[in-house]
Image (cartoon, rainbow, N blue to C red; front, side):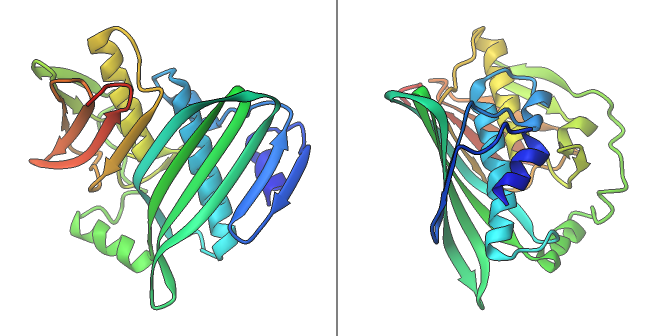
Amino acid sequence: MIVEILNAHYRSAGLLKYSESDDEIQFQLPAPISDPQAAVFRSRATVLNELAVSHRLSLLVGRGKYGLPEDVAFAIKSVESVEHSIDVVDEYDVSLRFEVITKRRDAITALQSTLVTKYGADARTTTTSFNVLPPSLANFVRRARQFLDFSDVKISRDKSYLSTVADNHFRYYPSEDDRLSDGRRVDHVPALTLIDIALCVNGMTHEREVYSNISAEFLNYTDPRLPFDIVENKDHSAMEFVQNGQVVAIVYNRECPG
C-alpha cells in the first residue's frame, strides 16, 4: 500500500526501509516528500506541507487498514503539529501510528493518527483526530444544510477576498477554490484551507509568517457559500473563524506564549 501511495502521489525514488506492526508503519526514503496539495496553498509555510502529507497518508492508509470504503467521510476534528530538534539523520524517516478513539456498534466513529517525520536535525510530530462519518450521517448533515447537490454546484464567486471589519477583525468571502480538496469539490471549506487562510492573514497583519508550530480545532463545518469572520485575539496566539454567529474553527499559534 505504501509503495502504491508513494508512486501515485509523491513520485518516490523508492523505499530504503519498511516495517509494520498492528498500529504503526515505519519507512525510510532518501529525501523528504512534497505533497501536491501544498502547491495550491497561498502561504509558503513549511508546516502546511507536513499537514498535507499527514492528511493524505492518514486517509489512504487508514481506509486500507480499517477497511473503510470511499463513501465514508473523514472530518478533521483537531490537529497539532510541533517541530523538534534531533541528532542529525541522513534519510527521511517516517512513522505513522493509528488509534481508534471511539466505536459504535463495532463501527469506527473517531480515529487518531500520529505522523512523525525526521530529516537532518529536525523532526515534526503531527497528531490529527478525525470524526468518521458513514454516508447516511454525512448526507443527513448535507440535507440539513440544503447542500446535497454540493458536487454539482459551483460557487458563483470566482475569487475570494478579504475585507477589514475592525482591528484584528476581518471578513472573508470564499470562492470555488476554497472548497476544493485535491481538485474535487467538497461541501465545506477544508481544515487545511482554513489553516492556510489563518497563515496568510497572520502574514498580512504582522509582515511575517510564524505558526511553524500550530494546533487547531474544528468545531463545525464552514460553509463555502457564506462569508465568515476571522478574529485574532489580543496576544496574537489564536484566530477564531466565526460563521452565522458561531465559532466554527480556531487556529492557535504555538510560538506565542498565550
